[in-house]
Image 1 (tube, rainbow, N blue to C red):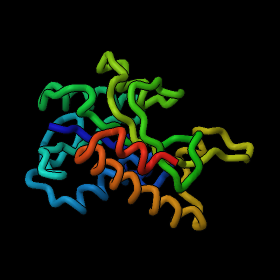
Image 2: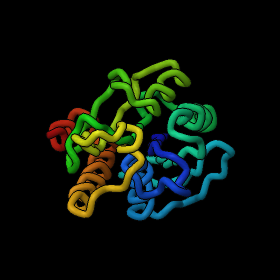
Image 3: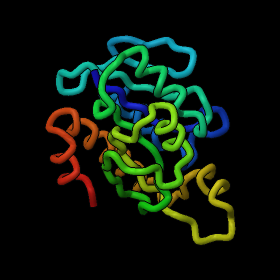
Length: 186
């Protein structure tokens, strides 16, 4: 069983922001792999799908970003599995818009959603698909920046990176992380 968690904030008011690219990626995967079941849970919305013949659960936490780990932990308690069978999809300020990076076993890099997942699971031995949102060069705080929508000129780039992220997740499940990293890490 694979668990894929897209990190984001509740979609009312935050749906189309940079911080919600994890939710966007899970939504795209859900469209590409028709769910066999809808999973009802208090802390997340979930869908059971198959990717490359492997039973997979997609989740979107119902918590705010800083408490994402609660939902991921609840999914682990319900579905079991190993940490390396968990893929966390999230935004990354240090990666340019249009690029993704796959990592495993790394620290949170200051991302509060990832910090929450590490704290709740007690491990960092899960896979991360990091989707670049770039870093602003304006005087706005990073909080304002991550909660802002993409600029019109960035929309084709983010669409491309979301598609790459989904292909990378499928490759991780089909062939393993090393192969996916060789294909998708820029």
